[in-house]
Image (cartoon, rainbow, N blue to C red):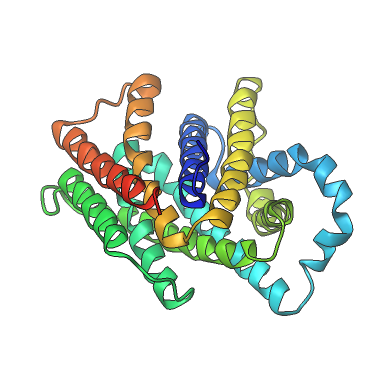
Length: 288
């Protein structure tokens, strides 16, 4: 059976979400020994190295993406937005329980959906609004606003979500005309440039035992962004972005396996609600 472009986009986004979840586990594992900016730098260097043969083949094309024109500015905006999103996210992962950090990060689909309507002029269907509303309801179940003292790191997560959402919108615009390989290569170069100075000022030489997780972090970052770019080519951002919600149950399970972080009852209930909303979106949009 031939899959519709929307269903293809959803599957690519699912692959991207799984990769991002694996990256989160690697980042958390390295939090005690490697500072967040250095993590951003190392993951970007590894991601760029993975695509080195591709970079060599398209080097002249890549050079065009750094020109001071409209296309170059769009690439730069994406690079800066993603750098802010990634850096803030890495700080938050080190400070908050993973399930809570990921739940807070699900303000990303809300911001992304609004930007899709305002910037991309996409038609937001009722199913897409419902998926986001259900997913956000699941997040509120987990967080239970007012149940605990406010954590300042919540603001850092919100900053990260805004950065990621802005970067996703730029990716959607670029994917209309630009090859996936250029989009991914350019991003890694910008992340290396932006993170180089803070990394140099606070460099911690990785231990031998950190190397496997550093490699996992870099590899999964590369696969996540490759899959994300492919997803954006096949479906509207407003249908792709809500798939981010499924990252919560995946990450919560991984946090239990790797760090013995046991999700509470409300986290499990909220995750079920989030999964239901995402499944409904895939079922309704997949046949269009």
